[in-house]
Length: 267
Image 1 (tube, rainbow, N blue to C red):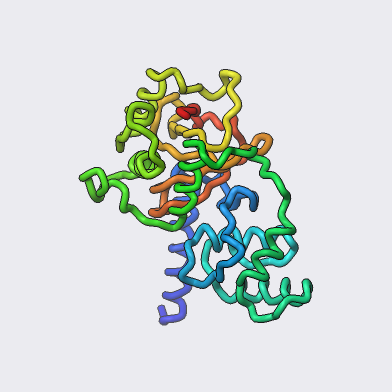
Image 2: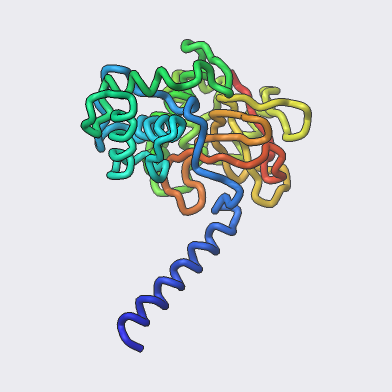
């Protein structure tokens, strides 16, 4: 077997293994890593976005360009050549300075083209719900720093991520438990009377905490925070999901998936 053949075989094996991962519950086969543009916090109009900018701002930029009809390539929160090319094409079409840089002029123009309201609903800036949403969005692309914040580095951390978001948003422990164990978090909210099982008539909303059970047994194996509900699809932010060892957006095709246990609304 020559080197070329070996490389071809290795590539096929790797593709097969990746496909197998995507077919597991942790692979979120029914998800897309794309949310509506208004579900990302936009940058301010006086910013200049660079490859060092927070990833959630680049997510917004990419979604905004795509919304306006200029394909930025993968919505990945990375400012690469395809995104820069989309910026140039947008600038040329809108008669802006064509430099491929998302500066104040370009950001202001893109912002003006966006719908004025989000399908996830308007949330007052001062509420705990809005604070935890904005903090979670600011963490997009971050790996596990969260379990160490609670003294247990190197463990499963989806619940620690949510707990840390609550802590950084100033939400008291009396209304939002700090824990790394999903069943404890769900039970806490049940005891508080703010938990709703999927299918009990409750309509989830942005800011709610969403719980998953991979065996559809109404338990809690995973947790995230909802950023939008649009018809039968639901978008949320989570950490440590499957092969993604960082904080990311996920969109499930339906709110009625049996792996969704329910929602907590603790605010």
